[in-house]
Length: 170
Image 1: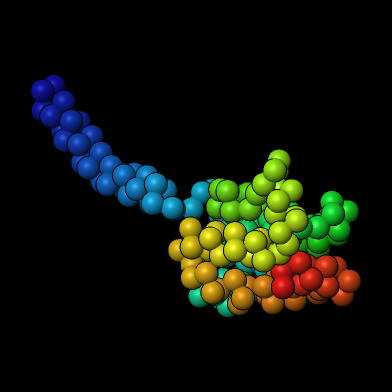
Image 2: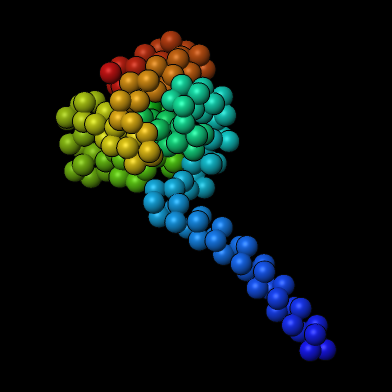
């Protein structure tokens, strides 16, 4: 009986020894700007777009999903609701992509949202560059990402919808 108890305790210690570092590493990554499940879900919700963007940026799918979400967040803050709705319909998983963007990447409510609309897309792209930095991407990569998004939206939503997005992400 005592031997069984010792073996059980040793097994438990062994299991905890293997899982604790992995659990801790996962928690550390999340604290250090790791990716939420939102980013992983967004990558799966729009695999064609995220695959192309990830390849262009040389990033992980989670980074690409956050980057796309940040840029679509800029578009959402700059366009009228019915205009953004057209873009949203052209992109599978838009809600998940928007959630995958780093927190506070783009102000879309209250005074911040109104100020963002008045200031134009330059401030929106600055916010996107900040979001890219939070994702571990270089801010200059915004310029690489925009054509991928506009090409995708043009292909899936038509030229007019692609032009809406391109116009706001100049």
